[in-house]
Image (cartoon, rainbow, N blue to C red; front, side):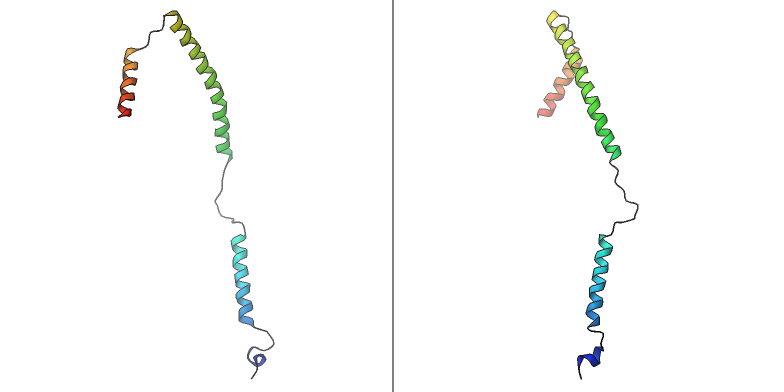
Length: 97
């Protein structure tokens, strides 16, 4: 009895089928998914761009405010709110402990 009589002239078929199935699985995994998952960068990028734009205007506003405060301190007309100063100091001391 020879191998040809067992399998015929088809060769070793079970191994060939196993390889083919493995290749099909790899192809399915590599194929792009057509599901509903999506990534959107446009919203995030738009928010980043908007934050950069407002950061520039915020720096200008801050420098203007600082210039005004420096003038008031130099002229002696600056009068800080004592309650706000005390509240800020208490918060700073409480966080330090």
